[in-house]
Amino acid sequence: MSKLILTATTAFGLESVTAREIEKLGYRDKATENGKVTFAGDENAVARCNLGLRTADRILIKMGEFKAESFEELFQGVKNLPWEEFLPEDAEFPVTGKSVKSKLFSVPDCQAITKKAIVEKLKQRYGRELFEETGNKYKIEVSLLNDMATLTIDTSGAGLNKRGYRAVTGKAPIKETLASALILLSYWKNGRLLCDPLCGSGTIPIEAALIAKNISPGISRSFVSESWENFDPLIWKKAREEARSLERPAEKGLIFGSDIDRKNIELSCLHAKEAGVEDIISFRRADVRDFHSKESFGFIITNPPYGERLGDRKETELLYRDMGKIFTKLDNWSYYIITAYRSFEKLFGKKADKRRKLYNGRLECQYYQYLSKEKPPKNIK
Image (cartoon, rainbow, N blue to C red; front, side):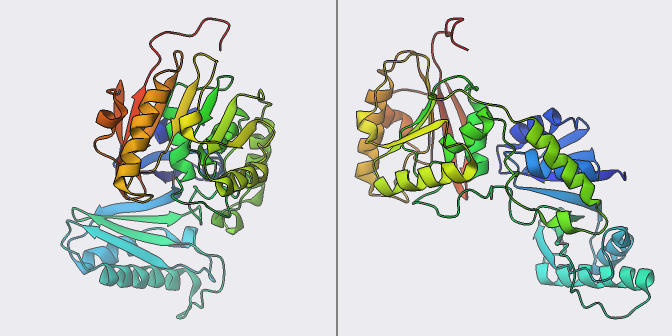
């Protein structure tokens, strides 16, 4: 099985979370940069990481990296890469691009040069002048940063946030990958009580339930590289069998979601069923202002309205004040709140124990983490 250099792209701020996931899958030779984790693997790693990574956006094959300050350097650098090892004669290979702080700043020109260089390499391999591109897709990206060109092939197809369970979204959805990251950044684990009292279309409770049952996030979807000729289909079959074998039962009655919008609750129930976790989540229609619990040492993880997208500013400020009054009354609970609202702590009435800068789409947010002051007794997992 050939050795590959792979790149897991991720949202800014989540690189260390994705790196831990990659290491947990057994790939320890890795390097972390802004928005990506690069690691050594093989075709099996492509399948296992696409199926199993909860917080990554895509899995790319890194074809090569070289300095390119002129179009000639770009052309020769691209041409020297082993495209013939990946692209069959009928491959469809669209080229996308980006350029940051580089002399070659025209992205369309860089894309055209890259495409031309790949075609020239394929001409040598297949002995023909024209390529109809009627076969499987191999999406290529040329990325220039500080005059260094990096060439990659996307193995995922649709972004890895597309789990397959959320065909319909409510207002202001949070990406599945970010929802998983919020959970993994908390101290919650399977067997502990978790609530999202502003659950929207149910993404955070559903991702928690997938973690609790150890269901691979990509198990119900397909990936563009599954149909590639140079990948043995048995690799994907074995990776899916491995993922299924690691699933486990989870305790019922510990994951809850609520929302004031009835339609959101209907969507949440639908999404939970599609994800195969409806048996361990309870959803109900309720106002966050009515949230209460007699239990101790529970967790709240939630993505409330930011004021920029839903409702007006005054309503959001009032909501945050009410959340502070309600959450702080809970007995030794930990609560985790992500928002782009800069004055959140002041309105909530309490300074967070920890903060982390994250991005919900293009919105810069803070993840406010309020931790229980006491450790749970030994009879609580």
